[in-house]
Length: 293
Image (cartoon, rainbow, N blue to C red; front, side):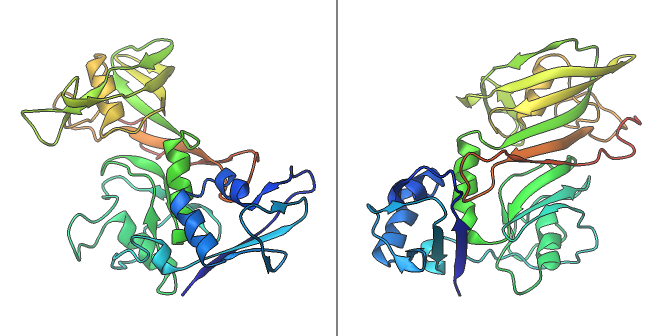
């Protein structure tokens, strides 16, 4: 099995070396090395060394093998595609609208019933994926990004690390939160509860959350949230620490009959193997009961 990607360079492309093109396409150095050693980079159907230039309108073909990747075939058992709501799909990328109450991925070998199991059934046996790129807590709804082939996984992982993938959430929180601002408290583990994270907890890590109040109700605020970092439970901990925990949050809020009101509303990301193109933005419809609590 192999995966081949062919891209035509645009007429306004600035000439550069093959190596620089692959770097600009966000390929990690170990993949560039593998492509060079095995001569799996073709320009107009002919091998070019890494130092040779590519020109406008050239056709570049890359071929990847399973040996190029640490985990080329995820071990995910397919389990009913009935709940899969596709928001966006290409030959490489898939964004689905995750439902409330569904775990994102299996935690045990052979586990079924998670979103990833359902997506595996949707893709079918002839696809090696799915490969998950982002995660949502079990009670969180909304846009979830994954790939269908391993070739674009390291590219998208690097784009996430470089903050080129933007995630915007909507949430109902307790109390009246006004205006906009940024939460910057570092987050670490809670020494008393391994499930939880804590501001300035054990081994704290940098965490940045931008917020803007969108709507108000008595004792409740609808906020738009943008993650600059992606720590575990980041939104939930930052909001709780601010005195405005998420409505329905069983870990960081007050006891409530309401379910968690947190929705990944929008994902914006560059397409793999492209340069300086506008990002793709995918919006996940808000659940019909989102403002009923």
